[in-house]
Length: 115
Image (tube, rainbow, N blue to C red; front, side, top):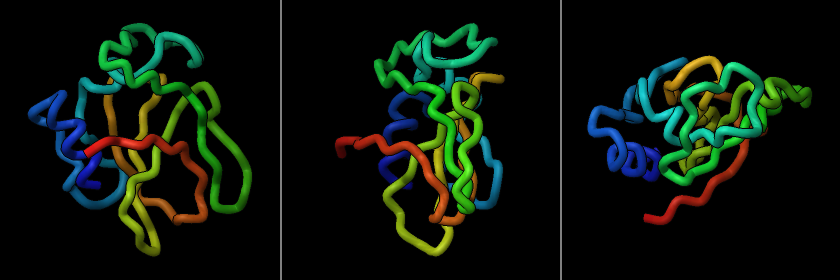
């Protein structure tokens, strides 16, 4: 998670990906700065993509194989490898960035972040 923590801390000094557990909020404000104004269902108001990250609502895949939340959510893998792993997620519903603990059989988007 260190690559995400560095990225988020650079944009929001209060952001924190080091907290553990499920459904944790990393930042209450970064979502709108990372989300593309297009590629999401409504309401996607407030999305400015001012960071140039251009996150789009790609949804994600359950460990069982079914896809969900396309145009409503997006989730990204992190580089930490373990039995269960954290993802970073954004949602159309609000401007937060969060993280969840998932089985690594799940399917998420990939973004390369330069150190």
